[in-house]
Image (cartoon, rainbow, N blue to C red; front, side, top):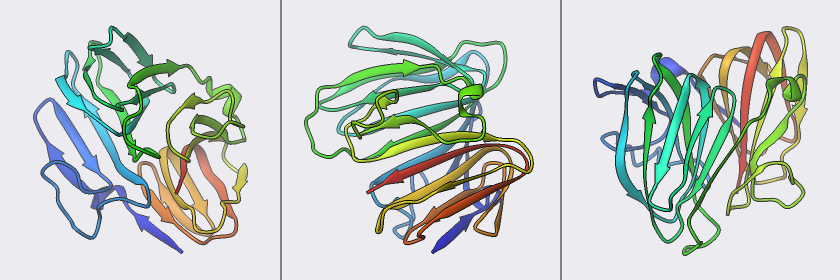
Length: 232
């Protein structure tokens, strides 16, 4: 089963400095029939104006992944972490027992990110933050694990949940396959480009919720940047 979530039909929250689309219920957007997909709780498509951002605020017991599509995001938190994550790269914050952080676009250009929340395997993990560059050349034509709770994804950023976020860049005409285990909840979003997913056409920033498909085939109809989250 594949449910298409076209970008233009996603809930649009406009806050002046922030233009957001919510794939699932979040903040002012409440839909009891769209509270997540398996353990995936949030997938927000955020555009953050230059010299603005999210002031300090708390989180707890959530695995929060940020994928930067354009520009850069600067993180700081009450644990003393500070870092700048650029386009194509990833940061992970395990909120655990509690963390207070801020995310700012200190650049001179608009920053575009995906913010993804996944429910952890248990409550009470120690909070932490980390970031890592993932060159797009390393993802050319194949999926690469960007964040993962599985030990065999050794190069990925660690998350405290049995899930993995994969990224791939495909040139027009290239294809890649992925075979999820039975009962897993898969969510695919295009950061850019256009693909066919098992025959279903997806455009940039569309989402697709998938379960009980033995194999996924993604064929690039134009150069594409793909994210795939495989979760419980």
